[in-house]
Length: 86
Image 1 (cartoon, rainbow, N blue to C red):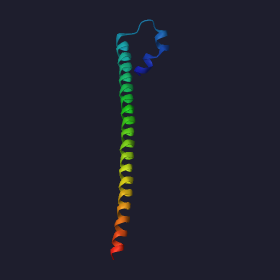
Image 2: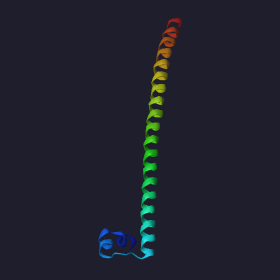
Image 3: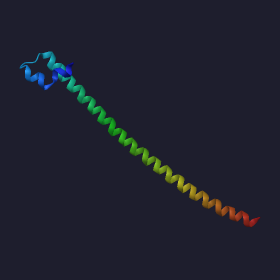
Image 4: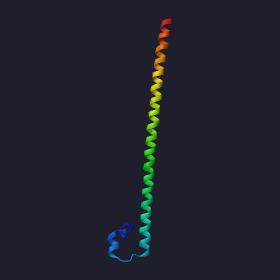
């Protein structure tokens, strides 16, 4: 109900609001403002974490690819060397 008391139509109808209504309206506005700030901070943190995750996955993919190429090349030449001895 406090949101209904804060609506512009109610303010236009009554010239003076009771002090309790003013306090409740202010509290509701401050609560909404803090909720918006917290939500915005969380969205920014989520964006940062997604960027960090992508960077880590890309780094691990590069390490895996380099290891695969190095291991494959080393295995190929060792296999050829062992084949020539036998």
